[in-house]
Length: 509
Ligand code: NAI
Image (cartoon, rainbow, N blue to C red; front, side, top):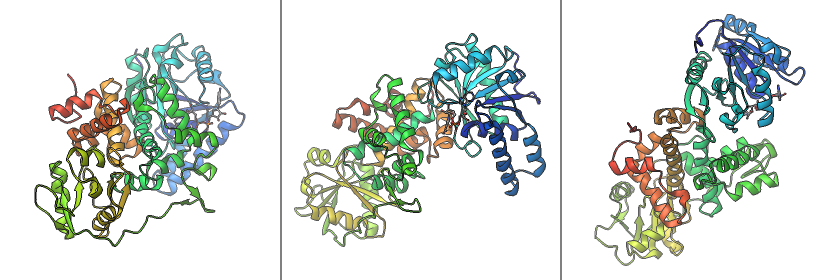
């Protein structure tokens, strides 16, 4: 098909001019494309055009665009009465209500209006691109063109090939996406596409560990910000998005994957969703809100003034032993150097994946004096420790006091395989690897999409490489062994690269 995606007179139709459609129209017009806008609600397209004009004027005030560029972009926005007027379009992007019937009906109508080589694209966030195209006479010219909210600020666009899409369609959308000043990433149709699939690792694993009572919502958020390097904790993020969006999307992805345990939703989200405790939009969610809509975050308990006598660090994990010993020496702890702890020493273990109980039992250490420290993540901004169910509170306090004695906050969580950050990040890496293994997208593209679309500090592959594929594999292996839950089984892509000692980005021939 000789489709010229670079032609200067390219016309893009946008149907549905709500939150997403108006954003798509804005970036298309700002990128130099002619835009035709239509909405079934009378006056909606005009409202959208007025809104875009205001947004572009603001861009000019900030110096992001010149006034001439704004005038040019606005002149390229044309409101049309209905589908029949979309005839001259080279591409039509649909951003109507998220309903399969409605979308299929719209495209069936459009198919009889536009020329045979016009690309038809959906901005759906959760429906299958292949299914939307299934009733078309020409599904080969159909694809997903998935933008993120708010469109002008979110550079990513996922270009999704349905099962019956021709290659030229995705190739053309990649070019058009760039003309719209987006960063397009190409992938094959899959539940949650790419970004929304990886995002389940962050939110759902947080929900699972909070459900188990490992840590409070605010503690999980603090750890993921300060230790994991995320801009927002998983509960803060769900508060902002709203459980009315996150929960149905999570359940849909889980069922679309035939109840794959990796994507299993959690009851604490479901019950809140059903109770209407949705987050900021209902002024109540995982947090409560004050009159100014600021989240009321429970304060952290002050670090105890307690301090241990002797401290013995387990050598079982050599890297963790080295990192923690160096930190303790800097802090000025009284360290023991013997191969076993003395009778009253505080015992510190540094598990990768194991819980404190497993460490104490398998290393034949006194569980009453054992405290685990997470050394897999940087410890400069916050430290995470956990205890066995029988750790004497005096030893817990001593470990807390010691590790906070240089002013760095410490989060104390209950015993859990993988602490907080290890298990959440391991799930993100595992899901990223399963996307690559299924050939949904290339590893480098997955990393790019996740950093752009989710603002994570790294994509799953880079994150795994920074932490060490062998260690991420170990975290998942320990979680799988301790819980006996296939949710935590390491993906085969990760397993092979960890065992070979190579980067997770290593492609298959
Ligand atoms: P919205 O409710 O703000 O806008 C939808 C617009 O479509 C409304 O103006 C409505 O009047 C119009 N509409 C409904 N049925 C129509 C029809 N048959 N023909 C023409 N116009 C019709 O919805 P929003 O948030 O803009 O979402 C639109 C699509 O974008 C959905 O498929 C959604 O899943 C997807 N999406 C939404 C994201 C978000 O964060 N809101 C992110 C990515 C995708």
